Image (cartoon, rainbow, N blue to C red; front, side, top):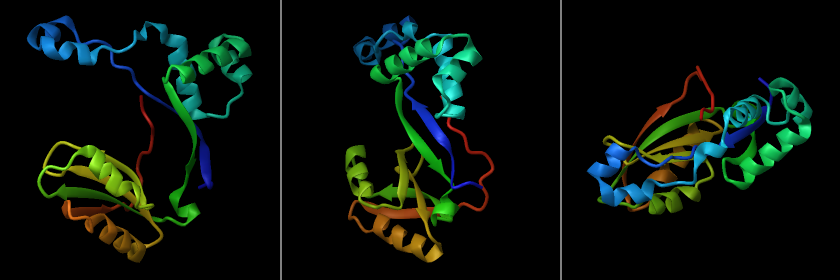
Length: 185
């Protein structure tokens, strides 16, 4: 596998206002679900994002040829989507093993008492082996993805994840084989 697969486009999905039947059931919450109108994101914008997700370095002219627009029209649309926060950024995807992190694990994190998501973020942000962390439903408070050089390095990283007083315990599962890896809307 190559050291990097492509430059990838990531996007934010905008949430439209809740349907009116939800607003009727919970009128106090309706305002918090109001977002900018998504009507300015059309089928061509979605197609551009899909193509950028496949190859984030594709020239605007190539994208335009594939969707029937000029290169300048594609550039304007991409610039607008970046400015509006629809496209949050561009990144390089690497093969973890090729860059010396061949051991990966999913870690369920269980906290003592109530811990705010921003506190978990602060705790985990200082651990470089943490490549992704999310709060989740279910028994665990968070799900953490770790990349390490080898099992010994993973164990050291796990000890750092477990060390804050807010963390009660963890449950880890090492990745054996990546079956599917894709970024979705």
